[in-house]
Image (cartoon, rainbow, N blue to C red):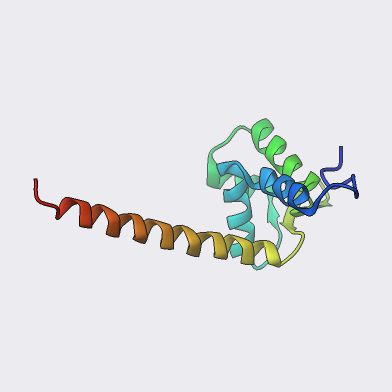
Length: 118
């Protein structure tokens, strides 16, 4: 089922579905690897980097394909992946920046709490 098939759905639902496609550490790692690569990445390279079973990686790559985040190209017996859109790398960078901001704020709150008298 295409995660974006129902054009009558509100945009916030379609956005939420996109984030569901991102909502697993393996999928985020795949996208990070692709974002850092200057050429398509072979499935065997993902397997070597992440130490996963091929079947598990295949499931996650399928989710990323269904959510239009990656594109697969077969070259002989190997399959190579690339980001479907450069904006996916931008999204990851923004998420990293947001996470850093949140962690810094949390650290400041923790430090101010520790400084309170007992």
